[in-house]
Image (cartoon, rainbow, N blue to C red; front, side, top):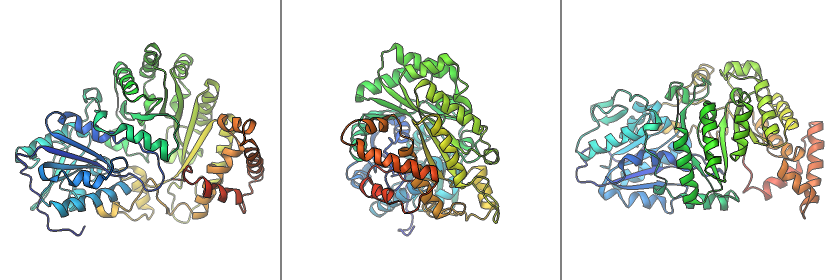
Length: 510
């Protein structure tokens, strides 16, 4: 990062403002999910400092919204996961440095938590707030406001002219001891309106975080490293109360639980669903589940889930090949995936099953699951329940995971600085040594277009039967069904037309 020599001033006595910046996490067309990480770390500071939460995707003139407050700022916090969000965070940090080189820049989130020392080596970062950030960031701000560097603050790392100091980690805290996220500090209504305008959402939807961590040991997921396979869930009563307040305040139609594993505790899920029903909360909700957990739920719990408004579950299936499932330590089988799809069908709950292609394998050896293998299995899911949606992501190794180490062993170049990590994008990486370009194109065509038309869900089925669109839909359905049955995707004229005229609603392979 080419900037002026570092002049960070850790003595911020007399300053009153704290600016928190949430960079765009991915380039391209993606749904806006609230930057709740900012709200969580801001909560303990509310009423003590002048807080300014800025989201690059949501805040108008976001650059000026950050730069205009540097004159009286204790520090600027930047939240980041690995990849494109780092690039956008660095871009903001450059502007901060150019305007006021003395303002301390604090980075937090997944990536800085994994690489605190490496992040502090960059001129874009002075301090890292690692792990759970609510208490650590508060203590960092209080230390700077008192004129001191963040010495001895657990979970903090920081730059000095004599070298990087990395303090001891902060023990994990049960999230029931964490303050509720102050949604009013975020521009919730604007985020909803942007999703309605850009992503054509017809309902008012936002996110809620009700648990942290996951007991699974999936080899591709950084949660196992950051949270040591521990899971904490907010008490059911608190979830019901906070969600009810959120729904009423923002007139929501749907709540998306952003938990890694909402369904980890069946008793808690049942209590939440029962609370929604008893409170008369008439909403839809969506949450993520492990495939080896959901289909084992009791019948009465599944009925509560359905009756309380569950619209869809997101199932992290990842693969249908047993060697791959073993490689990634998924703890689930292809049979679990199929049974979960049957539960969705039997209880009238939509399902989105996510898969990953391109897991690492030794150079010169064939993959343990081909693209066609994966597409064949997805067809089985579609036959069970047409309302099953499927997304296929290209594997990109997350640092801090066993599969990252394996990928490096198999020849993947390893970034060595914060700036190099900025070009390493797990969300939208366009190149992979284990996935060929033609495979990406096949996945986009077949899973993103032909399967939905060949196996129409309930919404599309209505369009096939009624309205002025029924004939175009019927033609597309017939073409797609023929191509899928014959596995013939050459000269896909209809696919190219769809991309051209539906580009604003098309969600590309990630």
